[in-house]
Length: 356
Image (cartoon, rainbow, N blue to C red; front, top):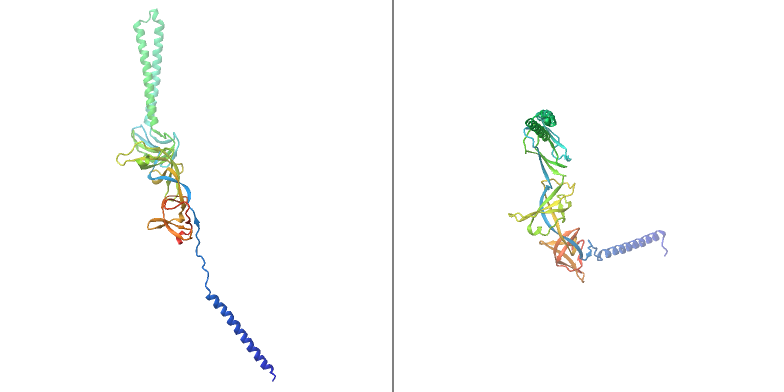
């Protein structure tokens, strides 16, 4: 029996549906198998293995101290009873040697000086007249015109007139010095650190008017115990640590030759470089290098802290990492000194040790 065209179309449609169904079953079967297959572990973080290396570590003495002027000058005036008319500098002013700092009223002293200058001229004139009279008497003493007593009297008068000239000149010089004392000059170059002089104040002899840091030089005065002082010498390197994390390199200028009997501590004077940015009177902490030594070192990233003790992970021949307790020392440039607990041939987990 022959099939009709409509029957053939229905047959083809059924065959196609059966084929699509088989393909779908095969596809979903593969995806299900893939989903059920175990995945390989993917590492979430990697670590590297390092070996302890020999490094040179500085042996330092920690200290605290005060920033102080290396040499602070007290500036006053020997004038007395004169009133300040002008103050030319203030705190922080940079001055040069001989610069005028303040000026006082010298009108009365100038008048006295003018009088004394006139007295000097009068004394010189009288001395010249006495010398002329003496010369005349000496020239004519053998002629009998002048007696020996007259000649002697004229000699005395000439000597007295000469002494009056010297006295008048000395008094003039004294007044000139008093006038000079009304001018306050800087005895050295430096920075004005304190000013008590004010316009209108009456100057008294010996009173402080200014303080000057000679050449603007500062130093760090560190207090150390006696046993630490014995290790420090002049020229020893030092480092002053700032609050912002920076450090200033310096050197020891002087180790005090005496020890305080109450504290048993002594002072170390560390010269600071110019432009250090520190202020006199400030407190600072620092370190003074006393020696250096070779030691094993590992990166800081390798060292972990557990219960207050330092540890590292060491990797054995079986490739298993084990927590190992160590003893540490100084730290510098990203390295940690290992003083005990680790051999030179050990293999240590470096970066990523905290995730092991």
